[in-house]
Length: 605
Image (tube, rainbow, N blue to C red):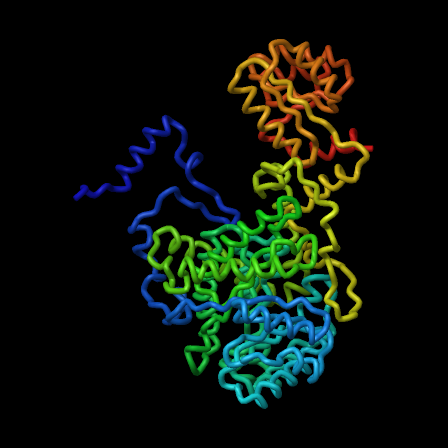
């Protein structure tokens, strides 16, 4: 047996190893969610938390709303006709899908019957969407079909009704009245208990660049808005709550996302409880989770598979009800049979090979995740209360405060991306410099709703992917008549020149430039001569800070403006070098995007 070690003893040891560097500065992580994360957690950190007091299936459902972890594998069907959609549906079911989604442009009984032909509605979840103006009609048609099929008690599914979508995405108010249309769609869904029709589509926030606490806070406010409007209109709280479905996003912040879904169930249960439902089961959240489009990239697109796999894993471990894995090629083309199959199989791997469906709430009791759950819940709750003080979700939406806050977060994240404070592998760090992507882009990723509505963008959420700025940069390079060559003039200290040539190659590779690396030159002149012989457009001097005072002026004078000249680093002699005319320095504090945009403006023809 090892003797117990106190927190004070750990801290003494860590402080000794840090050798005077402040503990909080070196090891404590300040999250974008507004709280600090410690480098280590212990049992005493969760001693006062109540999240471990309940079991899975028990109020407030932080540990899950059920006593198993059998989530549904959902595939979004992309098809232009009911016949085509049905063929894809039957194929997807045969290959492992247990939940299906389809956007219907033709809302009719015949189209629905064709789409659902041959599907066992007692075992397969059906989720439909359409133009908001036709959502009530679609719900009526679906309810009649399910009842006539004799599966009204077993059926599970949804019709996505979101009267605030237009305001969220385009900034223009929908003509639909949430109360009247909400009551109508609930009435249409009454014959089918498991049909949920009131959407809380917080995936829009995730794909708009919102931080995790924002998505959760706005989702809770959205759900509460449904409850307030419709209970005040005379509907029972149990009925309204039983018709709400949360469609949430998943970002790549693995542990945070896992904690988010646990916090979401806990807070939602407490919100619904305040409306005095007759049955405590009404407090259970039904949550569908979709992997992020915001983090997907066109370049090095197969890395999207790694991102979506960890995203799906965090949602699965958190105990969501169903998951959509977004195919890896969505940013640049319509998903094909291969990418859709891979997306399904990613979830099958989590079930059949990793057995994540066999354990309920495996994170329960984890010192770290329990603490994260409470921390995220606290920040989301603060945001929820602030929205309530503004009059609720609809009022804040009408005032534009929600859209503005999400867009502000998106801008902040793009700025962090530009400075590599936020990393997307293959895009702003470690790019594949020999990849060309222009020819594989088949469509504009920003499409309409497909309903023929007129939408005027005026203050909606700007859903620009995180990689979009860097992708635009590389596509400019691809479309240019010349591809700039970047020559690494490596000289002097071996370790420093190697480190800085690697850094510089990654830096300029983000613009798709050709990188010419070298083992090292004995003299600056030999390096300059080799660079000019190679037809370099940019020469990057890679050496140590101490040697730059000598090497940089020599290289600058030998080049005589024949190429762009860059010093890799921020040496103490920077001001002296600038006084001699040297302007370009790249280092870890550089704005990579702005720097590369400036070089594109100079070099591309």
